[in-house]
Image 1 (cartoon, one colour):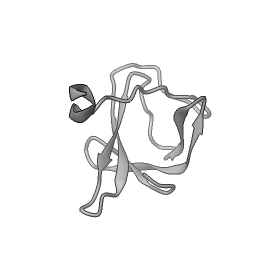
Image 2 (cartoon, helix red, strand yellow; image 1 turned 120 degrees about the horizontal axis):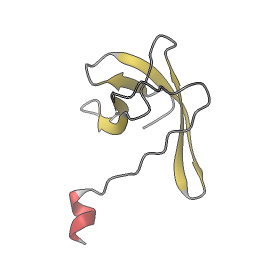
Image 3 (cartoon, helix red, strand yellow; image 1 turned 120 degrees about the vertical axis):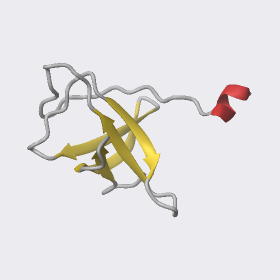
Image 4 (cartoon, rainbow, N blue to C red; image 1 turned 90 degrees about the vertical axis):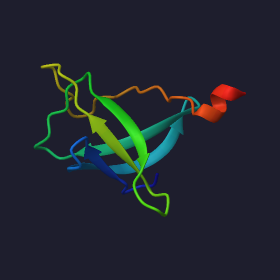
Length: 89
């Protein structure tokens, strides 16, 4: 994933952009900007997926059902899932 990678909802609509990628406390820190028109429930799930044959990465948001939504400058903590190869080791 790179700066300016796109963020999509689970219907394929573009809803935001990755602003920068870095690390903090040995963890990935991804700063994003969502469109102002989008309300993202706090129980939504986020995942990284391959968006092209060239291996470009994007973020997908699967909306939750909570009535409480993220607001400006909120932090979203998402645990990385292991790949099948990490699980075999």
